[in-house]
Image (cartoon, rainbow, N blue to C red; front, side, top):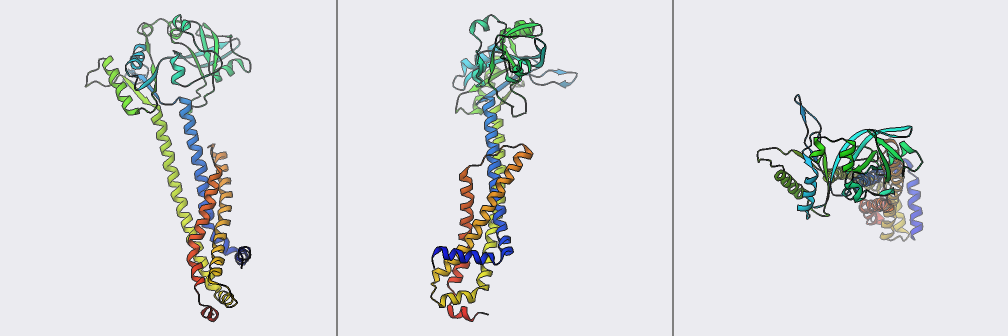
Length: 412
């Protein structure tokens, strides 16, 4: 009997017991669907984390000034200016093997006015190194020039959100905005970054030279005189150990701030890449847990197929005897039952793939999670189902093939 005839016989045998065949495939269906959902959602989660890392800038470390305390209550970090521009320049100068670029940042907030429009947001006084540290390009216009930085020029670069809210579809280049009554000319618009890992709109931002922020917008205060900054952002050298870099930066800042060994740091270090990598690791652990659940389901499905095939062999013992009596060889019987078990697994696998894709799409729609599903994943799922059919169908098929034709014909 050739392959197609054997396949036809197998399909007829399965069709004769539709409900039993469907229940037998249930374990495979659930297992394959779980694998598809796991890989699709897990891949989407990893892609989202990668996008968040890219939006922040790779190898990003942030240093914040200390927090202030008032009547026993501690405020947020950066409320007391303990860092300065010189700290940033010293880090870049003295730790070149760990730090590729250092950007001092002075932050403020307020209402931005352009004509009849206004928008409340945060503005940042930065140096050109900021664009390198954050890996942030320009959608249009240009960056700050050295003369503008040194001369505290009245220029600004807008984030996408600010540009849209103030100017709509119109280009903001060469337009004038006012921050705290100070007029600034818009010279550029940043590339869109989207949301941060914390859900903050990264495009809701206005950048200006740090000298402009200090001397013109924030006013001439003690902060201005000390060249203090609220934070310093660092881009670490590719491949450098984040922990080692963190310790070196901490050691240098403690020396510069003349802190005694028993004194706490007067700044806070945050390695953003490590935080996001921790989230990625959590996603990976969740994916492994889902894989374990899916594996158990596939194992149960395989055992179910083996049990049903054993029952089928017992029920069709006389049929096996008749086939052997008219000339069928042992390998014909073996291939017939093996094809039946593989067919069961494959049909279950294809149904599982369809349900898995539908489930992943549903999760993406309801929970707002991205999904990523490669064609190789589907091939892997179907291949796994085939392997289960061969592995768990082998024993019943071999048992049927080894039956004695005479004993089989005598079976009641």
